[in-house]
Every structure is written in structure tokens, then in C-alpha cells.
Length: 205
Ligand code: A4P
Ligand code: MG
Image (tube, protein in one colour):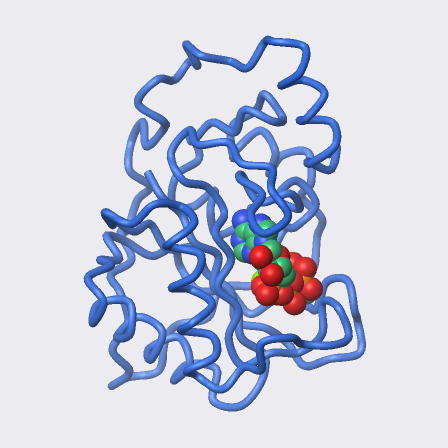
């Protein structure tokens, strides 16, 4: 199961979501389902407009690296400059690769699962609606467990999409057992060198 975090807080945020979805479709990446969409308070850099956030589950034959490149190409095509400053600042569209099945990466260009997941209610809240049982090896926890630990009141609220804007489907209930095929994990990284990598790449909750 592959999950993408979607965010927008500049310009027509709904249109940015819709355009990103159409773009994904046009390159053969199918959004199987979307979480409900939330309006959220800015995290990190506080002096910026409110965000729309959602998590999309997608299918693709692309590798994680090729998928990230595609996401970055979409960001640029929708008008986001390649390098946004300040860090965590406002953006037309942000497409983060949250998790790609049980794949683990720790390279200069790609960290998988995304390193900031445990700290971000705007990711965990929507993701918990979609796939609470999905397991994240670096933190030895499911999305739901991380969500319980990070939950802070007043981070955001659900917003209904305006009529006439095409967006991917939101299921009314989370998919039961929408976890990794190997949950509980059969292949937990155990070698010392992998454990050392884990502590370098991922932020502790
Ligand atoms: N990178 C490594 N791993 C990944 C991954 N799994 N997914 C590298 C995506 N990118 C990954 O990312 C910076 C670099 O991280 C890339 O070159 C990529 O190779 P970026 O998306 O190009 O830049 P960025 O989005 O500006 O990164 P930054 O500054 O870390 O921002 P974030 O982490 O994306 O957070 N508050 C709310 N409420 N809602 C939001 O959506 N978003 C942000 C931005 C801040 N505050 C927010 C929200
Ligand atoms: Mg990003």
C-alpha cells in the first residue's frame, strides 16, 4: 500500500487538489481512495495561511524513487518552485511520499517512511481515517498508535469539498485491516546496521 500526503495553502487550494489528482491519473497513478479533507493550522512555520490536507492511497508500477520524481514534477507543473523557502513555508501544492508498502529508504533524496510522520497531526489525522492499521517499522507502531500519541486538540477540522470540484473518492469507513500484508511484521529490521540507520533517519515520536 502506497500513501501520499497532500497539502495546499496558497491560491485555490481545492483546484490544486483536483489538478494534482488529474495529473496523477494522466501518468497512470491511480488514487484508490482519499481520506476526508481537513483544514489545518500551519505546523512548523506558524505565520502562513491555513492548509487543506488529505492522505491518498495510490497504486503504481513506479519504484519509490521514480514516484517521488513524479510527485516533484507535479508540484512544479502546478506552479510550485523547485525550492521553497523558508522550510515548512506556504505552498500551492505539497505531495509527500509517506509510505511505500514496507519499503525502507534512507538516502539524501528519499527517506521512507517519511521522517516527520509521528509529529504531524495533519498527516496522522487523515491517515487514521483511511488506514489506521497500517504499520510503520521505524516506530514499531501503526498509524493509529502514532495518532493516539500525537493527537493535539485544535489542529484542524474536516471540510466538505465544494460542489463541482472533481476529487478522488472518500470511503465512508476506513478499510478494515488496511495494514501491510505482513502485519504483524514478519521482517522487522533487526540487524545492528539497520537499527543504526533507523536512529539516523527517523525522528522519534
Ligand atoms: N525527501 C526525502 N524523503 C521524502 C519523502 N518521503 N517524501 C526529500 C517527499 N520528499 C522527501 O522536500 C524536501 C526534500 O525532501 C526533497 O528534495 C526530497 O528529495 P520538498 O517536498 O521538496 O520540500 P518541502 O515540502 O518544502 O520540505 P519541507 O520543508 O521539509 O516541508 P514538508 O516536510 O513537506 O512540510 N502544516 C500543515 N498544517 N499542513 C501541511 O501540509 N506542510 C508543511 C511542509 C509545513 N507545515 C504544514 C504542512
Ligand atoms: Mg514536501
